[in-house]
Amino acid sequence: MADLEPPEIPASLHPFTDLPDEVGAHVSSAGGVENAPGRAREIGSRTLQLFTKQPNRWAEPQVDEARAAAWRAEREAQGIATAGSHDSYLINLASPDPELREKSFRSFRAELVRCAALELDFLVTHPGNATDRNPEAGVARNAEMVTRALEEVAGPTRVLLEITAGSGTSVGGSFALLAGILAGIPEPQRSRVGVCFDTCHAYSAGYDLVGDYEGVWARFDDLIGLDRLKLFHLNDSKNPFDSRKDRHEHIGLGSLGEEPFRRIMTDDRFLGIPKVLETPKGDDMVTFDRRNLARLRGYRMER
Image (cartoon, rainbow, N blue to C red; front, top):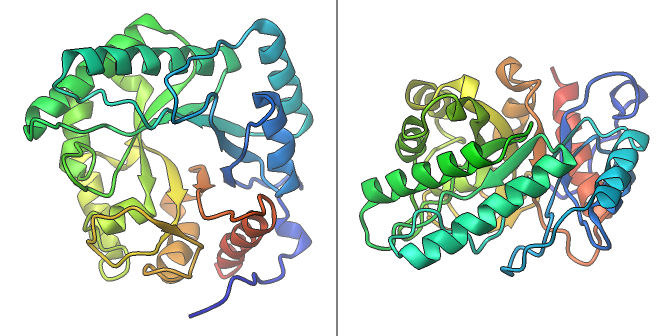
């Protein structure tokens, strides 16, 4: 198996030329969201994902105008083309428990308010778990809560339903379930919703990007539609195919290997879709992201 040393990237593919470059990473927002654009620039990225709050706490900070202005100034100064958020890991909009579902809704709505204040492009959300083991009801509950939030919060941010690894009672672990949520969100709110495709999650959920790449995308297009695909999370997997486990690995070093990422990076259908790394950072928030990004860009050199 290859190591993580990337190929040399020619100047023509450097992200800070005038050429488009849509690959980036989840970066830290420690000290304030306005610090994230500089961290994205440090790893050579015009695309970023961040947390607008601590993802394992219910506390909901507000974004005042001063912070929003600082964010906008830094985003422009650092040349960030695409920026979005990932919501709290505690949120479960599919829960059958009315109290938890309402608490989750308030957190999700607060996240959407922060995203609107920062004029973020996307908000990634995990569809949640139907702990009553009734996935159809869980899908309906999720769709209802997303619809309600979008009705109450205007703004440019698109909500992206992320495919999950399919463990337990998740209502996000298949294309059919995601399609069900989308179908349950009426227009005009549905036009503000799309899908985030996480390669590790999809492979772990039984979508064989290694052995049946075109078949996976044919099923996605049939059930959801490629026009709904608005973001990639590019992560290799520490676990084998169809494991139903979510553990990310560096690009090319896990069970997916290099080929699916090479194909995604050179697939004409996906060239303009933002692609965000969530690969391990260890104790170094810069070096591994730079190496993984360079590896992805190296695949594109092979076109």
